[in-house]
Image 1 (cartoon, protein in one colour):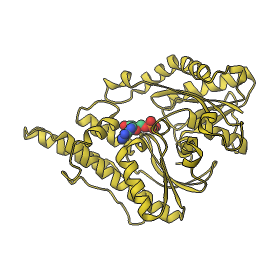
Image 2 (tube, helix red, strand yellow):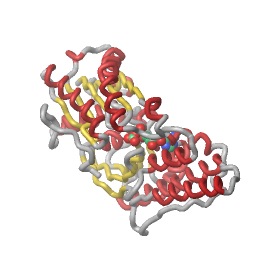
Image 3 (cartoon, helix red, strand yellow):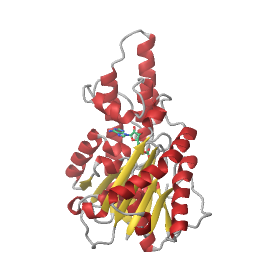
Image 4 (spheres, helix red, strand yellow):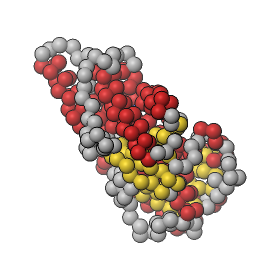
Length: 347
Ligand code: KG4
């Protein structure tokens, strides 16, 4: 089955072609035939964050060139495609509508089915795009940690996800981006904060960790974000140099401590042997390393997708769409009048 997948939930226009019909255990290269991402960083950078209206307009300009590139890289044409899968939500509605409407139009013209995919399902299953030895079996406990979400799920099968905990305020990626903004490091902040953190001392500043209730695997990052902002403002008011590297390192460690501890707690609650991460912040080196160490100590197997499958991409949407379509689960095919959604029913 050849799948054309489209992702446009935020500030990346992405398209991929997947072949999921060659055999039952296809290797990496036979599954993802192409994976194209066009980012809008340059457009939003000068505003220090995503401007939704600009994002939608950029998606409109990029959607056909990106899809065309994905088809060309895969060596196929629209006539070869059997199923279209597109992110239906959650995300910025204006952005979602561009990719989702494009997908429905392709399906209508080509007379093929279209499936609407939950972006979170994509992140939860992205690890399955890896080589066979690097893929977990079901069930597993998964942390989705990105600019818009920080949630823990029990993943029972490719179509069954149970929410265990979620952020009560900011997502971890959002906290990285806001800290970067306060430090005037540009957008998106995560990669820059993380790079500067390598030159700093993670114990230099005791930023708070929000553990919440003892049993809870919910998160909260807004207090940490405010604490960093206050620290920076105090330095500026007192006219003393802002210790950027130490702030980045101490902030990053505060985020990682909470993400690792709560993920391990969640795995203990579910009794799963396998722990998975996904989402843009899952590309963070410290998080990957410290989660691996924590899992090894606690006796869990830890699975981390390669960075290209952590950040937003269409390959993960194609895979999630394939499973949903094959399972024939509710909403597995959509009609021309089906709408996008801004909030995930999974979350
Ligand atoms: O999953 P993603 O591409 O988009 C969504 O938010 O859905 O994640 C983007 C987020 C941004 O907040 C970005 O700052 C963060 O992931 N990020 C990182 C790193 N790379 C991306 N945060 C920390 N460390 C990184 N290396």
